[in-house]
Amino acid sequence: MRFFIFLICLFCGILSGVVYDVLYIVRCAVCGTHKSAYTVKDKIFLIICDFLYCAAFCAGFIFTSVMFGFEELRLYMLIGCALGAFLYLKSFHVIVAFFVNRVYNRIVNAKERRNDGRKT
Image 1 (cartoon, one colour):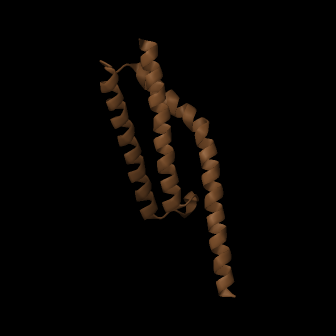
Image 2 (cartoon, rainbow, N blue to C red):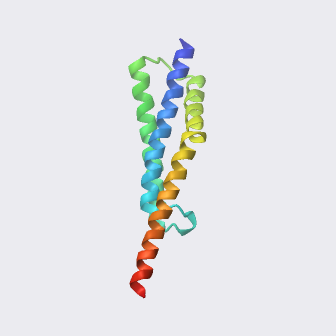
Image 3 (cartoon, helix red, strand yellow):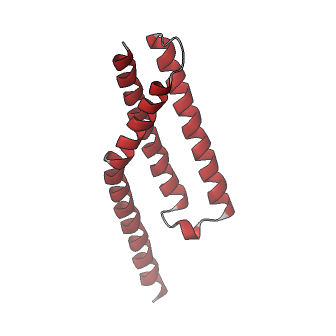
């Protein structure tokens, strides 16, 4: 039974990675990908996104715990969630981040070319 609970927690961690990617795409769309150019408003938006990520993860874990009848919180459950999120971030998130950066750079380059054409 513990292995089954560990697997469920592992998938809960992987699902939290999906939520992180959705918020990552929103953050890149709103704030950009260059952290050195972030303003105070961008940093506040990032804090709000991080809070929403933590709240979504907690709500999802509590929902999963209630649905599957986990009676108490155990260390291996937390390790399963952390390992699932880590595996997701080291695998699929790298691909998503690569494509988000490419799309963002193309959009920025297209805007710069369009603005250069208007100035001349």
